[in-house]
Amino acid sequence: ETGVTQTPRHLVMGMTNKKSLKCEQHLGHNAMYWYKQSAKKPLELMFVYSLEERVENNSVPSRFSPECPNSSHLFLHLHTLQPEDSALYLCASSQDVQPHRELFFGEGSRLTVL
Amino acid sequence: DAKTTQPTSMDCAEGRAANLPCNHSTISGNEYVYWYRQIHSQGPQYIIHGLKNNETNEMASLNITEDRKSSTLILPHATLRDTAVYYCIVRGINTGTASKLTFGTGTRLQVTL
Image (cartoon, rainbow over all chains, first blue to last red; front, side, top):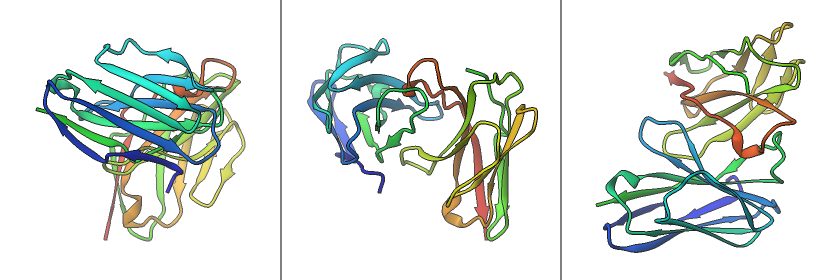
């Protein structure tokens, strides 16, 4: 139990569907992140939020839309995805965005796009 | 951030010490060595980090050589649950953000009976 909870753990969607991934952290952290992990590839940073403001967007296609309504919750809205978007999506949090902070990861949401 | 080199995979018998090496010959003075691990289909988990002194916590020990060009993560009594990919990451404390941890491909540790 890392204090970062992701739902759903598994999601299967068609290319025309709209779905959302949810992340909640119970650690009192001020920074939250979305990462993507495709099969046999290193983690790729997607988005960074600090105090509910997006501070990084790593050239992610617009079919991925993040939302951070407060410092404890982070969403990733998915729309018209492609099969190559199938991956493990990981949420993480840290006390703040200082470079030495430890990242606390959730268990991930495994997405399959048909 | 300095680049790291790790073996692709290692095996360890359960109950024995697992010693995972990492080379970081281009490390600079303000860069820390971090270790994370990722158990299959889960998110990465922080293990330990250090600057130049050896560090120990409830999960592992980290030995950093005097010249800081390499380090070893030690799991003193490996169990089957320690089977995972272990990432050695070198990270400056004054540059970028926490998100800039570059995980690379790591070492796949297989603990066997």
